[in-house]
Length: 138
Image: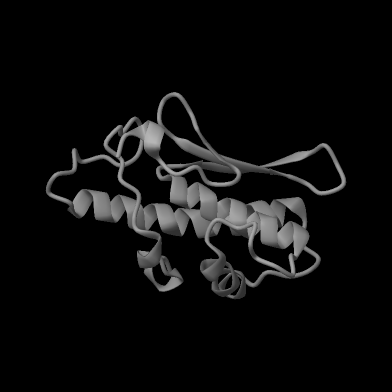
């Protein structure tokens, strides 16, 4: 799949050099919370989902990129109601780095891989959403 056809995730954009980044607005302010740079858009999307959940505690998970993954992730990461912006950044980053680590391991194990994952990879193929599960990343 060409990079122009890659699915757009909420809160995720691609830098011109190929890294995927995520940030989110803090509710009730103009402040943005930087969530990090990642090798895959799925990792950046998971960071956004965790931060969104921590900041807004939605009753409905429709605004998330991967709704089935968020509740198990938040339970695993010990999400609390009184988290500071720094704690939210760390929880989001921890979840996303687990996804990125799995993505990199899979890329390196693929015989067709060029030995590096993500950055500038115009041949990036996202995983099937049905194949994503929290157990794969923890």
